[in-house]
Image 1 (cartoon, protein in one colour):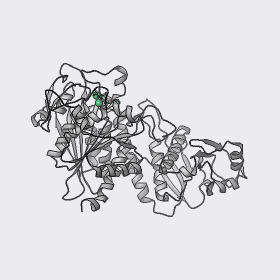
Image 2 (cartoon, rainbow, N blue to C red; image 1 turned 60 degrees about the horizontal axis):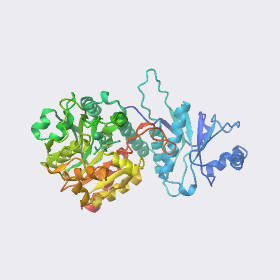
Image 3 (cartoon, rainbow, N blue to C red; image 1 turned 90 degrees about the vertical axis):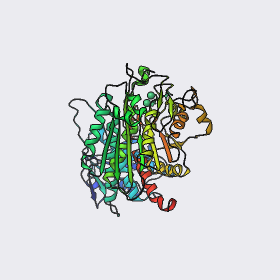
Length: 507
Ligand code: BES
Ligand code: MN
Ligand code: ZN
């Protein structure tokens, strides 16, 4: 893997005394911090003057450039970054601060930069450092296949030496950043370059350096022989064989594994229920769930988290052709239920169901989490601002709420009432793969999956609205255009909390 975090040099003196191209300075709306006061003093009151002029308000996203000509200040320029009111200072403020720095430094082509980290009584300073670096790393990501696009990366960051041990912070931020870059790369890669076969090769290659991650693949006709007609049927319209890729990592003894299932439709044309051109334009991102769980496995294996983890990646292309599955088909699923295909474009739930059953029956998982760009309906409900969480377990709901707060991957719990199960009843089969047209589409998808996850603790994350962004926005500078890597941080935090809470919950 490439190294993501630039070289970090901790210095004893104030960072502006080291020669770099720029010093980034955080500024709040209604408060000058100690560092700002110190610089203002050196600059002979310049910052206070700018504030009085109304140029340095400290509003979120405000950026002011100052060119000091004082021997004590060795940086070529000072760039202030507005963080909003001090009372609203939160963990997210720090991530956004890091994001602005990264995106500014990347666009300007700076090679060496100095950063002042804002402090608060609420957030411990090792956590502050972590969050700024996380936002920074996530913002400097680029995905480009342009010829001759040279990457002139940021090489060096100067920071004031803190009073704590920085090693664990730097290790964690590097591992999670790598994992998110992996997830983004997979999702951003054009569909033809990351079809189920190429994805399998990519995964084999990625985990070569981890002997304790086992890879097992069930491919093509073998799916049918084992009874996995869901994955097989959705994928049979493509010339590339569908497959279920299984990754196993054993970091603990005598514990049933936790299973993560990621929707991996490498391209979703809709099948015979073909999407519109506009509707399929972004459907290379329909592999984002799989991309996320691959990233999580990477982070878990690399940091040797003491958990038993299995990751399931049902990988297919959903295409129309003479061999495609058809509306009206009835499939006997791996879990034993029969499913009427009402719409071939509701394919995600069909492949996920087989993977969930496999995790339950063959791998003995007692906790199963799935993550999927499952429905357009969740985008209608929550926009691009949160994933939908559906679960049959209050305990998992609680842990996910905590994991979400900590990771910044936002989610919102959705209901799974009995009525939604009525909506997926079929006249010819046990269930059908759609609900009521135009009503609670995300719940129909979740209810379908829930039928295959009975008797286990299960949670479903519908990430259709948060898996990618059309454009880098000012509110989230750590999300460059394209895949976000949503879910990697959330699931990693989830696993960490679950592990520590076991003592409390399971004895
Ligand atoms: N991959 C799509 C869901 C999707 C849509 C994700 C838009 C991101 C943006 C999924 O396979 C799908 O097509 N769902 C259908 C289901 C319907 C046919 C019941 C949908 O949401 O329209
Ligand atoms: Mn679809
Ligand atoms: Zn899909």
